[in-house]
Length: 74
Image 1 (tube, rainbow, N blue to C red):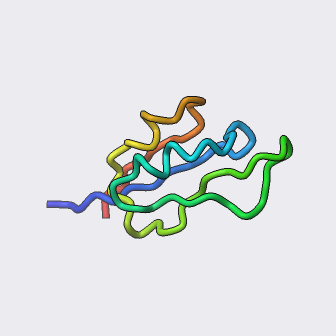
Image 2 (spheres, helix red, strand yellow; image 1 turned 180 degrees about the horizontal axis):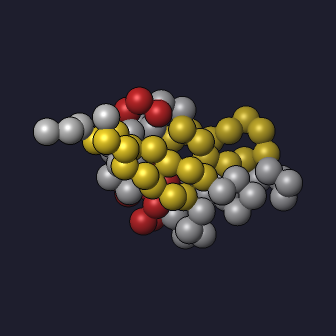
Image 3 (cartoon, rainbow, N blue to C red; image 1 turned 30 degrees about the vertical axis):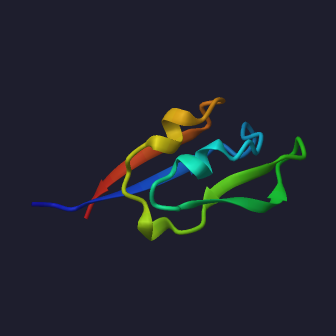
């Protein structure tokens, strides 16, 4: 049986840095960037990508819909 690994893609220009996705992640994958987007907001990114299980909690909870979740067979 193939294992599944998760990956996310954050639209950094739409992210407003609310940090809701960080608290929703059960694997502590996400963190806030030290940089900012063109609107002046920090954005979330995958700090620990190897821990992502592809549960999509971050994508479901994002109020702006700027997170896409992918599942990759390994």
